[in-house]
Image 1 (cartoon, rainbow, N blue to C red):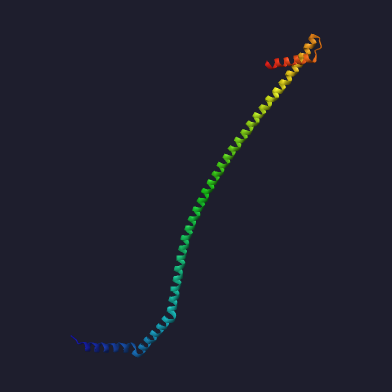
Image 2: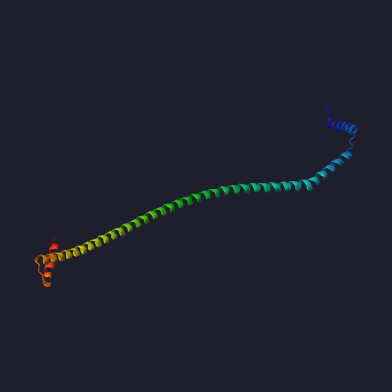
Length: 181
């Protein structure tokens, strides 16, 4: 087995040959590596960090916007549901109000019909009473006229002039006779 120091020395010698062959100079390679690290740090510090911060900020704003949109979507759905409920309630109230109005109108019509019937019945009763009174008055007048005619006929038949007292007696008797018949 080969020993470790010989191995490292052998590796170092071969590495030196390769670097010489490719024209690599260690001092320049290390300087370029340091420059790369400095440029990497400057880019990270002044370019990448602000860009990442802006990206994070924008992602947060987008997330907030999406959350807000989702919240508004839920509120809109709730609002639409409330609106539907309010419309259903309003429709139900309108139907109830219409039904109450119909019922009130029917009751009013029934009441007015009853009152009109009562008034008509009253008018008919008064008219019947008036007709009865007029009939009685006319019968009385007819009786009186008939009595007068009977008296006139009797006096002509008897060819005698009756006194006032006799006339009244005959008139009353004839009138009484007609009333009883």
